[in-house]
Amino acid sequence: MNIYDKTHEFAKELRNVPEIVQLRELSKKIETDETNKRMLSDFRRVQFEAYSEQVEKGSISDSVKEKLNNIGSVISMNPTLSEYLQAEQRFSVVWDDILKILNDAIGIDFGFATEK
Image (cartoon, rainbow, N blue to C red; front, side, top):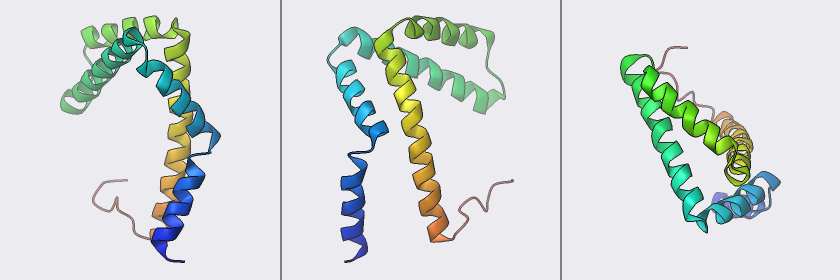
């Protein structure tokens, strides 16, 4: 069995990981609801705006913080979006762990150019 066969086998296993199954199901729920899609898109836009300010200026402006808090409050009251974002976070932990395992197996520190 070669590396590509193993990768396809791994991909098949990933489809059944509970965190991925749940995220996929919740994602389908959001896709079928225009209001939830728009709210999630707006939330992502404000998140990106906050991230960009943080990177460019070293801090986030009060107006962007307020927008983030306001949309965060609205989303937290929406059970579908709230559940989706929680599932996304759980998936992110699993995915980060998988990437760490793969990077460790490669044995190269790709962060050599960054300060630690």
